[in-house]
Length: 472
View 1 (cartoon, rainbow, N blue to C red):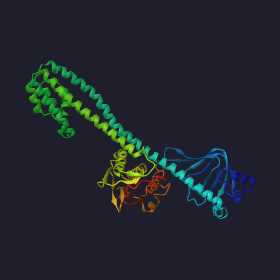
View 2 (cartoon, one colour; view 1 turned 90 degrees about the horizontal axis):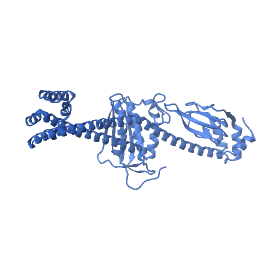
View 3 (cartoon, rainbow, N blue to C red; view 1 turned 135 degrees about the vertical axis):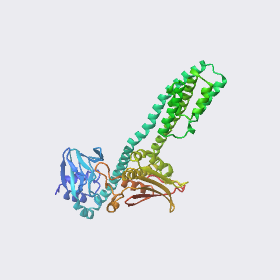
View 4 (spheres, rainbow, N blue to C red; view 1 turned 60 degrees about the vertical axis):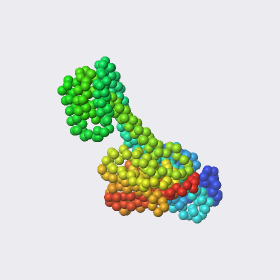
């Protein structure tokens, strides 16, 4: 063991331990071993027992965690710090791999010495306990942010697909829109040159109005649509007219009887121009409607993402509309559900009261629980999100019809770093963070599971309008 006045002097200058009584530092030096680390040398291995405490004198070290995309730096220590196991710490295994980034020295104190340390060195122990609390807070804060970014990362691919569909629809419709406008202009010039009578113009308007009633035609099957287009093409061929208008006319509600009435009033090139004019005009209206629908879809997704991430999150608890919170979360996870053909049902009690909490944190709770439920079910499975009043509080239930959680691990699912997912696909921190966030919002969380049904229940206080509390 090391028993050097130099070590004691260095401990007395340590930014964290320097305030401890000198006799405590002497005890620490007597029970510690000075170690030197070189760049690249490994300090700990993920899952391996944490054997003791390291009092850093110099150098730089970092903890790396692999979440499936390669090792990512989680925490870094430089200069004078205390790491490893600390008195009263419940950490048994290292959460990741730590390496030396710059050569340095540390005093290593075995874990077996902690009981004696707490008896002989109360001042030193108190400092270390305070440091442990600070370190846990830093670690939790970093993990909370990292887990949120991981959750958003998992959603990004699905959201890109969700946004790409309406964006592609807008691009396609806008391109066709220009061609249809050109067709309207050509047909309009031909109609004007035909010198039609008022009665003939009235007949043309009749067909246009019939075309414009497309919304009343209902939804046709592909076979029905093909048959209708073929019938209109035959009608046009029989009269020597351009069959290119058949597709556009078939998408409207115009009937063959209406076409017959027009053909009885207008003949020749004027009839062809009238049909092209009516078909192109209806196509323009339909394309404009498609563009509006797609733009509305994009706007809805943007609002859902903003609501989910809560970009304007306040730092105090506030009344939260759970209906909106849950709807936003389901919206941003819809692509994942669709990719597995999973049905997601949302059942909310009418006039559901608001709860008091931090909306961004609540969204993260729902995001993790629903995402886990989607992972748990097989193809064409089902996830139900149900919210209502229960025992004077609001209870949100998220249930799936997956295989269930085995009884032997049910008590462990909320423990940090526990995961049943394959290596690289789960951090084991999602449910631990969910539990912490639920507690921060004055809530409780429970789980029941059996083969064919797993249900997480989150109970939250109803907002009573008495004010809000500052974020802890």
